[in-house]
Image 1 (cartoon, rainbow, N blue to C red):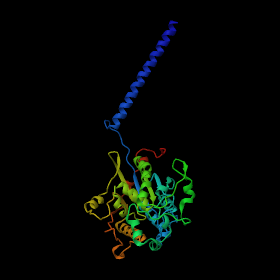
Image 2 (image 1 turned 120 degrees about the horizontal axis):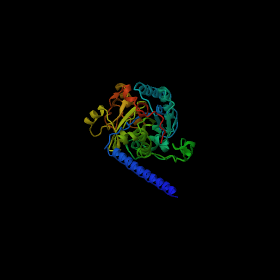
Image 3 (image 1 turned 30 degrees about the vertical axis):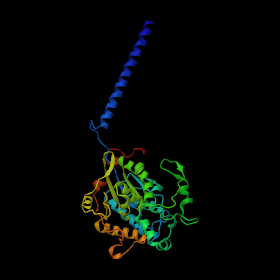
Image 4 (image 1 turned 90 degrees about the vertical axis):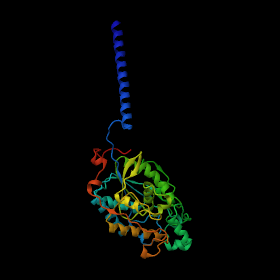
Length: 373
């Protein structure tokens, strides 16, 4: 009996000792984590990733000056060449991507295929999301500029370009290109695998597009950047425009003047400032800000991967096509800039391999096999 009591006493003593050790370990771990979060102990921070925006290649509708929106034409030969040119610029600049985001419209998806094939990166993860679709033009989808002006008036059509919150009329019953019965929206499968129905917009303003791209940026693309990933986003003029607006904090009244040239990769790199992703502006942006005056397009904190001549041509074509689409083409000799003042083209750049090949998972010991959250 005495032996049994001593055995029980020893067992309880060992249990108390283990409990005290466990409590001390918990306190030590708590102190270490608290010190790391407060910057009291040195620790290695994961570098932030980057985002490259690319506007899809042209379609035959582009040549016909037709409002496309959520209609689904494929890219033309010209569009395929534009995608190939963009891929070459990315290849020469050494970009290695970890993940791609694109819309569900075939002109963006096809452009994505061509770029990844040229880069020999067809194996990487691609997320197709309807929130990256082009602005919905509702009742004028499929109409040419001339048809829209004849029906609604030149000033009304022009207001849809100048205004941040003006919408074209909604779809009419039986109208072609109406996406409401499209299977891809009736059974939308999100990134987590959940199937739900998406209600396509009847018509959209630029403000409406910003409202749907903002959560995708915050919960998807920006999260990837914080994880150190290199992200490619192949989308449309207006969906890219609204994300550039958010990144560079461009005022609503200036958002329409942001130009998104076709086939020119637009590169954003970031720093973490007060817990917020802040774009790291290239030197050319400081020059732009120094020369900034009211009425000029806003300066953006991005590198455009093209030589100066090619970039100037792409910007001018983008501005002309955009204004022509709304009957604002004006005098071709002056670049067709009625109502938007001077066209300011940023300096082009073709950065070297070392700066762009960096990805946390490939060059900083992450191994590339970390599972997605």
